[in-house]
Image 1 (cartoon, rainbow, N blue to C red):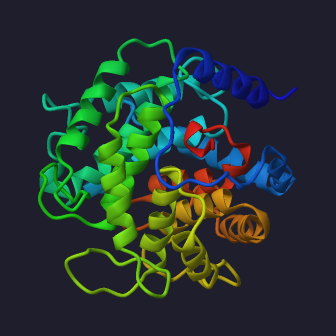
Image 2: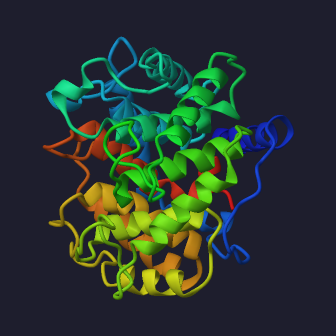
Length: 355
């Protein structure tokens, strides 16, 4: 039996017996997403690509546990959290697996970025980039995924404080924006917070149903007539692939699997199914496909069977010989973490993918 299979079983037992899983919310129908049988879609070439990617990414970790080589995002807590999730998706945890030490050091770094308010952010984040709530959301998602699979007692309270900050900064429309203040909102940051809250609920952290319901309402109202999603409610905006993929995942992770909003959203996304690099030149390529593969996973059926092999092969075709993926804006560590999360989706090891 593979080590990742053994670790997966232990992780799921831990989640089931130690952390109560909160009920989903929304007008959910029965989940119809991909199954564990989908692991056969991970070909030998894919396995090698994943192995090379994980090895390369682990080699990029700094002494303090951080990741990042592009100045603005060097040590970015969200990028670090995504890198940590890439290792969790392979079966390693803070307690065991080939990359257990890498995961532990990642957890240590994320915890070191906690501010007194519960905000997860580096001290100089405001000086280097905009949108620190992205970092907070992805870092919170990582801690929530870690929480059910570790014996470390120092994760729970910081996670609760991070959740409380997100709850307290939801704005009147039901969404979130770049900074931890309940002012304006956009769908991208909103979905980031919604996924982190869902993961925290799965790990047994209390999240008010009202908070989730208001977030769902914000996402619903962001859908355009063409099935895609606009950026903000306050202004008219065309649909875009990356944020539309995010909007769909925001709904799925809130427990909404059926209805017109889902049907129209999937129809919109399918026009961007990877084929001959059709989405390679789109802005926010890795971000878009990180969410799109999750939407395909939840949708299941033909959508999943067509989408995953297409993005799998496209990513493998553009992997560097050393094992990473390039990105000149946020950095290759970010692009590699996102690519590994996409490729490892059929493993079904991250609790956030559980239905």
